[in-house]
Image (tube, rainbow, N blue to C red; front, side, top):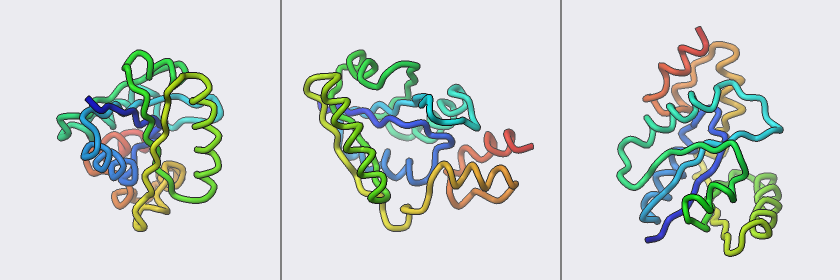
Length: 158
């Protein structure tokens, strides 16, 4: 069985993330979407809220599960017995970071491969950072996030 992991902070999950999940689900038998914490980031939604958003977004995919981890990605990969990481790229800046992460992950866990999916042109500008900024000003984010999570976002913003 070909399995992979699509890790991220997903704060919040965007239509760009969903596009990567859909495309990955078509390529792999099993997709683990992993909600992780990055010590360098400040979160708007806690890990439980982010997991709940992704669980809703991924509900229609039979081969996708959502998980969380407080540790390193490679530790979770060992638990799940997968060695393939999926990453979405929007820009050259993303590429530089992903190259660094791929090298480190490959050193920490033998056999790790990182597979890059390029963002579709209409998704290049969509980021969680942009969505969080819009949320903080009470702007409409329905064009950037899946409709199934708007109630969670509105609950946060009220």
